Image (cartoon, rainbow, N blue to C red):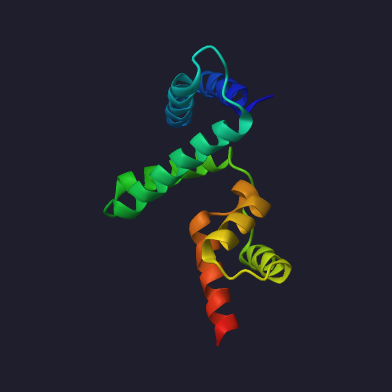
Length: 147
């Protein structure tokens, strides 16, 4: 079952359960997926990797909105929305697992070019790590190695 099919099934379940928030959030995610699909080819479903990127992008938008919102009721709703979207994302690596991946790439290559290292680590961890966190780990490791 693709992520798009899973989201459509979960929308149906949310409608049956009268879970308005879940239904609305999933509809927004599905809408973003369909916009991305239309940009590529209207008659063909997005591949899993592209659909995951869209879901991750929506998650990122929610996180940004959460940071910019003042305290209050809407912020609590954003937390619930973020939690719903996180169910469709792959499990994120822990700090230690990410550190191990960075160290493994650093040990495997003699290059200390930040761009090359970023590319290598991101290809290894895939979408299970935030690029910003990977960037910080690599910078920290490079500073530590140069001292």
